[in-house]
Length: 402
RNA sequence: GCAGGGUUAGUGAAGCGGUCAAACACGGCAGACUGUAAAUCUGCUGGCUUAUGCCUUCGCAGGUUCGAAUCCUGCACCCUGCA
Image (cartoon, rainbow, N blue to C red; front, side, top):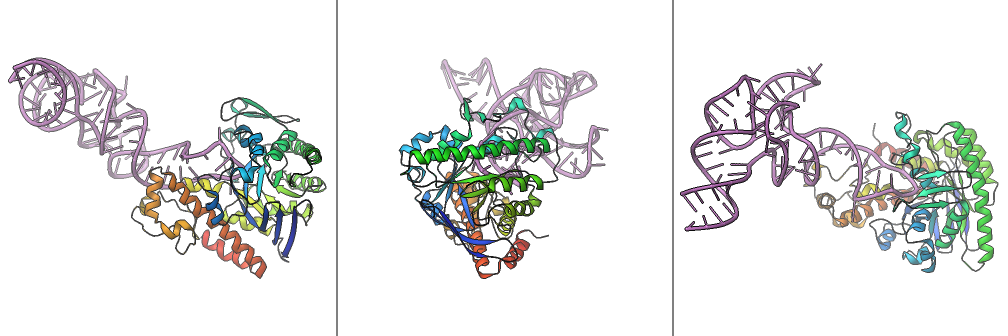
């Protein structure tokens, strides 16, 4: 226990790296493995905090870059911190803004999906003239997506912003590369991310010393290295040797090799600290990540996809906009315990989404969030019961039929 | 009754002799979405289809022309003025 933060492992599997545990933070505990719902701008899009809670969420992850731009991290600080500001009295995380190095930089306007074997052409990396984020060794210059104004993020500023926002768990400022960046660039970028990790630690020490009465805010170091085993292991060793409270595994990962890559990293990282995987939530990825030692993970997908009409079922992820649902008065998923499925039909939800009614986004988000959290709850229970591998096999066979 | 204006694909609306199966918007259909520039984006949207291909379409009927959604005549309906 360090100032209200701790991680305790309850059950470890023999045959895989999967485990259950509890992360304790000043705002409460997280039973792991856990899906952390994304609330980028201090709100889970289209959902009230009560609905997020009722869907089973234990924690929310917001974004430093977005809150720095609007409303300003100092506003969140003055409000009493993220939890109080957004009326989410449970644990919170903040991402460092590292993702925006890619999404506004070389990945600007590009699909950042973790697909392998796709056609590789110039279209996949944004030309420099179109980018809104530019990296150098000291930091990143962003052009705001809101008004085009220039902003400079450094590891120090990211930590200052995250500290002001007041999340229980912060991440180091890292550079997220594209899978398509050449090896030489991955090496260069990794060195930069490592230098930044040290600077983040120095900065957080300074802030803790200056404000000793604040609730403890944990800092997780991020491991990069793309799809290269040597780089991933090197990164795991380097970041793992630094005094972080936990770790984030991020960056470009070929979907098919997710489990393998996470295993490399987790073999290098200290086993007794929590591991967060950034940006995943597809069922197969969830099973792979957890089997490879991941304790928590976050993703925009369940809520983003919900707003566009897709909903999770045990048999895949169809789209309610389909004409076949026009007169389908069944719930999205039979026997689903979520509020949406208890009260609304596919026909109604299809109508709401088609009509652009915000309630549609809300109800769809409730279902998808509930579904993914329920899946992770079931996985957690299966690890405890020793049936994880059975669940993994039967669940995935049904969801992804050949 | 007189004088103008109008009638284009599911809807609205461009086009005003050939390059028009007909811009564009919406709607419809299908697909995408993995640390949220995402209530967004992409494709298709007369029929048949492998098609640089054929067939049927621009109120209705007829005509001019090598060629008409585009010009002329008649008819039908709608709108605006004046009666």
